Amino acid sequence: MKRNFLILALVTFALFFTSCCQNDNANTDNEQKTMSTTMNDLLMRRSVRSYTDEVPPMEVIEEICKAGTYAPTGMNRQAPVIVAVTNKEVRDRLSKLNAAVFGPDNDMDPFYGAPVVLVVLADTTAARTWKEDGSLVMGNLLNAAHAKGLGSCWIHRAKEVFETEEGKAILKDAGIENENLVGIGNCILGYTAGDYPEAAPRKDNYIYWIK
Image 1 (spheres, one colour):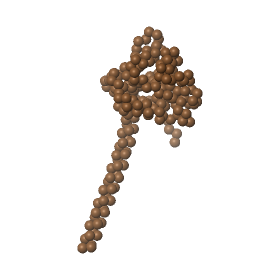
Image 2: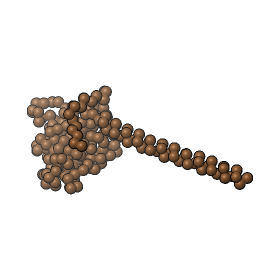
Image 3: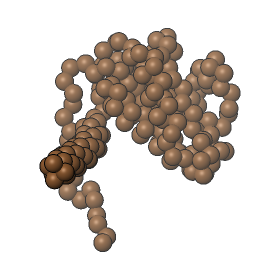
Image 4: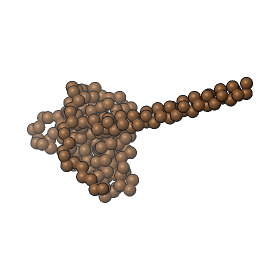
């Protein structure tokens, strides 16, 4: 009887050990799958130039902005600032100022109908790397928007817009009176209208290896 009990105990242990190994393997597979999915999602990000007028939930916009604040900055000086514009009137004022850089009679919408504009500026006195720091913030915003299922695009001419008196007035109205801030870019975002754009082929000589 003792012998039967010993055999039963060994069989139970073997089954338990096999189950643990299978669970460990399953967890590893899931982790690898998650990592792979995350990377694939990142590679699928595109610049979107067609939006619906629906404003995303405020908590989603806040999460995207938070992602921007965690971009690396030179010596952690955190030179950039983000101005999140969800107010339609201010958004439209920024659009007109941006279009005016092309010429005073330009009536295009450089923001392609996107209802949200995240303006990134940087303090030129905070760090020598202010321009690079602001660009990294822009990159984080774009990738975070994609991760949240939103379309986004980098729109230039933030520098020119906030050199104007009206641009400075918009900042002042928002409680920002730092004269050392220079516009880096505008991250427009919203829900994509129509089909998601296809990626253009990557050039052959994009990556060089030194091994």
